[in-house]
Each structure stands twice: as C-alpha cells, then as structure tokens.
Image (tube, rainbow, N blue to C red; front, side, top):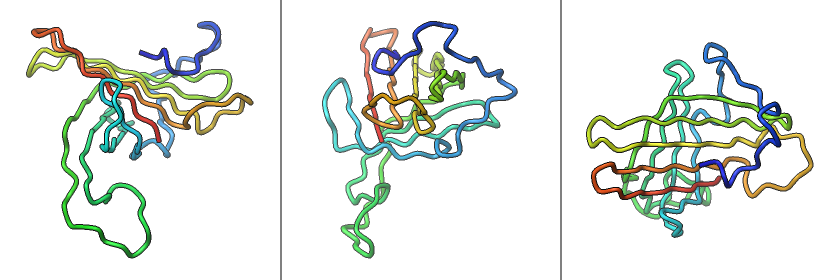
Length: 160
C-alpha cells in the first residue's frame, strides 16, 4: 500500500520504533484531510485521521461536510447548519517506522469481525522531514477495505 509514499532505499534506512515507545506526532493526533479520493475518483468528502497512542490504534473517518464545519472557512461566515455525516470509519492497530529523513510511517491492518473484510491503513507524516526532496503533501494516507465475500475493494487516498 505504500507505493505512493517516498520510501527509504533499504530496510536499513528505517528505524523500527518499539510499541512501548510509539508516540505519534502531536500534529497527527486529530488531523483533517481535505483532499479525498475514493477508488481513484476525487470527492467532495473530508477525511479525519486520529492516532491514539494510549490504545496503540489509528482511526480513519470519511465524512460528508456540506457546510465546511471541519475545514477552515472565512472567519465569521456560516454557510449552513448541517452537521458533518460519517460515511465510513476504519480502525487498525498502529505500527510506526521512521526513515533517515525524519518522515514517520504509520501502518496497520485488521480483519473486521462484522463483515470479515480486511482493513489496511498506511500513513506518511512528512511534517518533520529534513531531506531536500519535493513531496506532494506533508501528510498522506492510503487505505483499503477488502471485502472477503464479494472480493470488492474500496480504496481511499487522502492528503492534507
């Protein structure tokens, strides 16, 4: 799933962070992602990424936000009063790696007991990156939900 991310050149370029020392960057604890694609198609949706260091989990939500309550807007303007509506939610255990440039990669997968689907989430946080290369976004998320029964896959790509 990390094909779209800037990768370290070899496994030796990654630093595995032990689970008892995993402390996600405070900037990622509750992050709104304004560019959301579903199955390769641009959408008007908003993503919310939450990392829980105490529970060692990450949660990704896809929200419909018609009034832009989750995204910055002009100060003092209210467009409407409709609350954001959650369209999808994915939760997975958190595994953390850091590369030599300072980027932190979070990944996790789990089997959903309700419908036996596989959930895979990969996050790249480049906000502390020190290398001089250009990346499309400081925070990039790729997620997939694979339904075991119907063999259908829903993919999500999100950026800040």
